[in-house]
Length: 388
Image 1 (cartoon, rainbow, N blue to C red):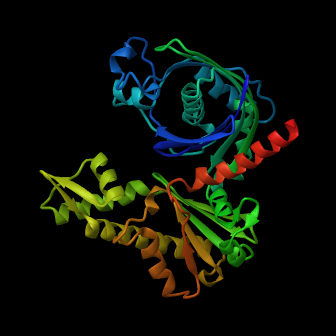
Image 2: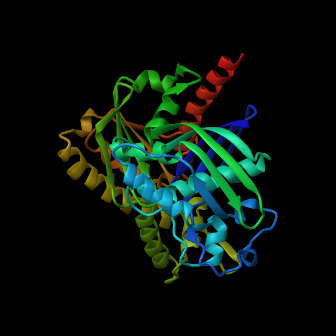
Image 3: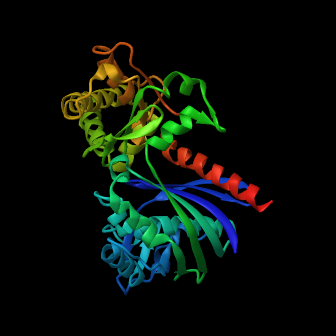
């Protein structure tokens, strides 16, 4: 069996992945849609691209793990649901039915969607490398607040051991043996990737690692907050607001309607506008920077109000104690000539704490999976060293 080091960041709408196979690295991402097969539909009729394996995920999965301990019953419920259902994932799920769902809100380790997206992504990337059987060192992420929940043990209980997967469209079979699972907190791994490179503290890290820093991760459904104190995660500072990119898109929809004669863009159009800065109207590509900046400003004002009045007061913290903010996640995207959510937020911060600074990783959207990749690289290098 081949050896893989594999990392997964299951988000609200996308799963981002990192793999090391035979010393080479691969980053991938795909959508999160999931739906059970209804027992009737011919899924081959719904393949969007016969050349793209990720559009053909009609899977039967057998998890052979043997959960023990306090969460055994909860684990067995998820395992039984996965094992006894035929699953459609990703593009195929969405093509078959508009009832396909993305990762639900709540504790990720309690959601079958979470495990299905991990397994579906893994076998898709195995297929791309021509791998049918693999021993896997797996890295996964949880929101900072969920990371310190004892129920995260469920992830190891469910995924450790042998997993058999059959693709009902292609006829391919896969055997996965998960040797170890490394669970890491989102945002914290992104911080670490900025402060430490190749085992050495970066220039930014030298300035900030000993201080109190805050990461704000604006995802699709939640805005997660994590504090790093003296270079270590501080669980007492972990929290979440139950709004994020979806609310930002609502603000953007309103601003687009105001600026462009009542036009109401679709969700796909909104996502394109906020990531590119342009809206397609008729035969023209029109700059929508002012509308995006206005939506970002409104979101930042709400976030700043909740951060100062709910978060800081609730945790007995003061804005002036914070050395820096790091903004990550899809809702933190920065585009030239558009004031981002983070920039609007920092304008408000500076009114009260002029010495607090902000920074962002090189790629805001990939900050978490990039941080997890750093951990897996270290594990891979140790594995290589031990094999010599």
